[in-house]
Amino acid sequence: MRASNLALIVGTALAITTAPAEAAWKSYISKTFGFSYEAPGEVKIETGASRGQIAGPQETISYVSTEDNIRYTVTVINFAQAQAESATILGETHFMYQEGKRVLMDTFARVEPGKDSVHGRKVTVDIPNNGGRSTAAFYFNKGYLIQLEATVLPANGDYQSPDPGRFIDSIAFSPARAGEGATELKLPE
Image 1 (spheres, rainbow, N blue to C red):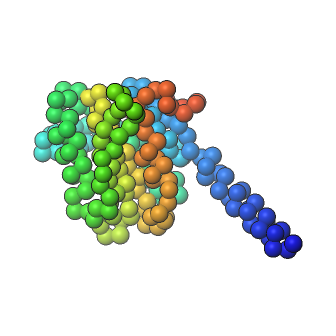
Image 2 (cartoon, one colour):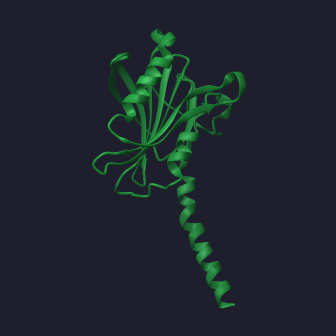
């Protein structure tokens, strides 16, 4: 009897401590860029620049949140003028991401079924100098390069956490798949 009571107390305590982490995940949608995803915490907008040998210099918009020392980033680059080069640009971005890092997983990715499917790449790398572990996915859709990246920072250290995978796999390119009550992502001012 005591063992079953102890198991009940431990199970209840575990359920209570894990519930807030689940509740922190929110659905976000960008009607401008045509995608939605889920991430924990509040999303902040950052702007920056990217430069590839083929792609050249490009402005970036990133939607970033950090929770439990895991950094979740969705970066969007407008390549409307270079849609014919989408496979080359996607390949270059994928190569640049993994260059100089230890690659743990590298595979094809697909979102949505049938004729609406969007294909890309998914990769997991160890960041040099004990910088953590990062999982990323890259998609080129309707003139936009979309990069999702979840980096488990060394302060977290749980490189087996399911949260990066949940984030990466939450991307959807169909507005109907956005979570109910999804927050609209704004453009930078």
